[in-house]
Image (cartoon, rainbow, N blue to C red):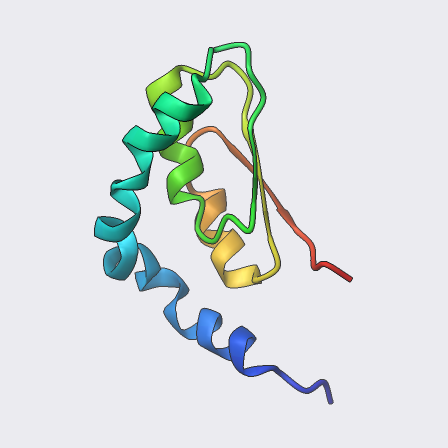
Length: 96
């Protein structure tokens, strides 16, 4: 039987409500990222440690990206939420 780390258990239990808890916090990053990254529709975006993909989806929509953004996360439940978002290509991987 595999041992589940406390981080894995935590994200499994909060994945569905993660955006509800943190959306207000992360929304403040969007204008800063849009200005700093100066994204164009032809750019390709990779969000490493993407969580639910909230930020990547906002960048995708606001910049009119033509290609899906690659979002990488290690937590399956968080990536399942990301799969429901527009313009994202979730990849579940760990750093190992």
